[in-house]
Every structure is written in C-alpha cells, then in structure tokens.
Length: 295
Image (cartoon, rainbow, N blue to C red; front, side, top):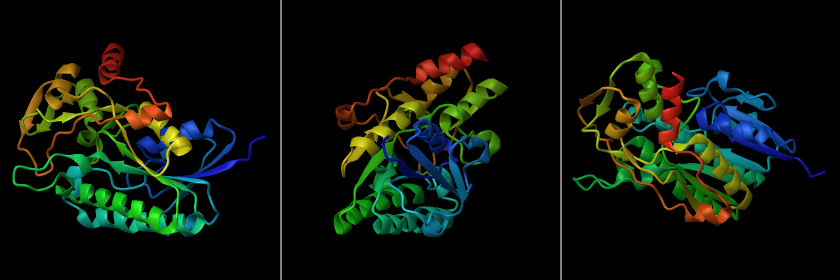
C-alpha cells in the first residue's frame, strides 16, 4: 500500500477549495486538512472525509502543528473591486496570512501550490498604471508570487504557482444577491433565474477567459504531482465579453460607470499544463445551455 499523503488546503471551505477537497478525499491515500477563517468560505461546503479547522492563515502553525506533504494555498482575499474599499482586510489576509503560510512552508518543507491571480497580467491602463497595480487585491497577489519564487530560491523549497482565470461552476457566490464577493457567472445565473437585469460596470466589452472549476481542479492536481518551480496558467480557450455572456443567458443588461479596476483579460498559453497531461473538458456555452435547459 502506498504511504498516505497529508495535504493542507487553505481556503478549503471556499468555492475552488471545496471542489479540490472533494477530488482529494476521493483518493484514500490522502489525509486532507482544511484551514479556513470563513471570511468567504461556508460550512455548507464541507466535504465528508476532510478535517476542517477554523482559523487565520497567519496562525497556520498553531492550527496545523503537524507536518504536511503538500500545501494548496487558496485561502486569500479574492475579489478585485471590493478590495478598493477594504485594503486593510486585503493586507491582513493576503500579506500577513500568506507570510504565515510561507514560514510554515519553510519549517516543514512540503511542496507548495500557490493560487496566483491572472489579474497580474491585465493590460496597463490608459494612464500608464500597470495592470497589477489597479487594486489592493491584484497588487498583493502579484507581490506574493514574487515572494514565493524567492522563498523557493532562498530556502531550496519545492513549489509551483497556478494562475486562475475567472473560475465558474456549481457552488459559486452571487454578490448581487448575497454579498459583495460574488463571481460574474453566478451573478448572471441568478439574474436569469430571478428574471432581473444584470448590472455591468463599463460598456460590457471587457473580456474574460471563463474556466470551469473542474478543469481548474484537474490542473491543480497535475501541478502538484508534476509541476516543478514554475508558473502555470489555467484558462479556457474561449474568451467572452460580458455583454456576450449576458446575451448567452438571455438577460437584460444595465451598464454602470466603469471602475478603476474594470479591465479585460485574455486566455493564457496553457502549453505548460498540456505538457503535464491537462486538457480542457468544459465550455461556458455548454454550462449556460445546461442551466437554461434545466431552469
């Protein structure tokens, strides 16, 4: 029998984290620990077979005193526009929290998989502001990727960085109806189900490479198994403007003023992931078609 892996997932009660844990516990050789402060996560997302611990990632050494073999660090503040309103929260979760995880990593020397943000690659604004400097969220995420690369070099640690691209799928939060931290596809889905118009900041031509959560989780598993001190973008091939997505749902659009964080993003080169064996299996068009057929 293969030896058991002890795996820590920070943010394990969140959207992507809960899907990842579901995949991890399906392998009986994995002992899975979740650390979540439930800022955005929910106990409704708990998966049978995982060990759930509540606490801040800056205190990871207290909450997870045992050594682990792999860390999936997903537990950070993860919304662009709201981060402009609460930079102190972003700093606490993304800088203080992630520094605690990195010190834990340095002590125990597991392999670290860090969930970076594709906002790092957003185009520069017309006034010359770099994409990663548009908001506290994007700046802290970019800073953490640099620091993780350095920790890996300084202390000879194993790691990989995964960049998420607008993850969607079952279990998302819809900010328009239950708080400020919702994701675009779930907000539009709820607008469709409730017969309400969707509010879009800007003219709606801004684009996203919406990527299904199952494709994202499959990539994370491969990166943990085969990735080596590199960066991997996880994105769908297709790119859709927000106006197009609203039209795919068949909902009305209401356009508001653009914010300082309004941006476009494109699909990324996934050839590194393909070399590990990854393939995209889901499209946004199929996902929306299934929702409309089952409504």
